[in-house]
Length: 258
Picture (tube, rainbow, N blue to C red):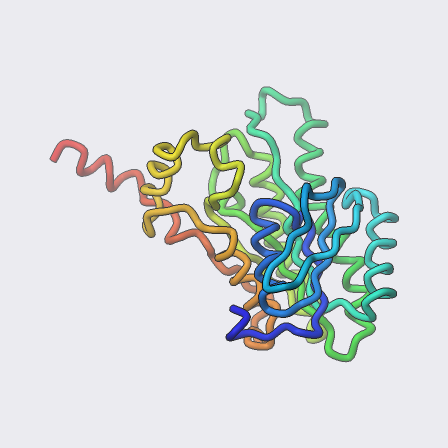
């Protein structure tokens, strides 16, 4: 993407940008020439680097509004501007609704919906002072558009996140664009915890029309596009990055005995 889209002299913040999908997003922005600041509660084992550039890490608890405001003010003070925020931090354990109390499920909603809201509000305070505004990208999930047994609170939060992005896009236009990437399954260093060994990962990949799980770099490329001037007229949109989605179960059922 760096050869096609040049984000040099741009400043990007990637929440949870130190591993998995977030690390892929961070590398994509570095390859495009951007200065990247990542944040999480814990520092990565090693810095994220690509194309001769290294992302800076700053610790912050995204569930603490005061700390988040301080973080974005530090970015503005030290870099002079903020062009892009990617709200990537999130996730949650597999837990059936009946197996966890309301408080546990509420923590999942807090991390996946309220934390991105808090970060976006703080980023907007920086972007709205800039003549050229900025761009916010939410990292959503197909779990927000279909039933998600075992991750119902996560799915509900992601559904809310997509709607939140659309409202932000209207309220903050034309200065700040806000879009959502709706992700399917992505292969990361933790995929074996969800899908098992290589055979299991391959089997899961075959349920996707494109025949495999996404690579974090592909998610990063989509983020770079949405952050760039090539997407200058795209706001309030939801871009599906899911390899064609899921093969409808009725197709397999209808051909099972043939």
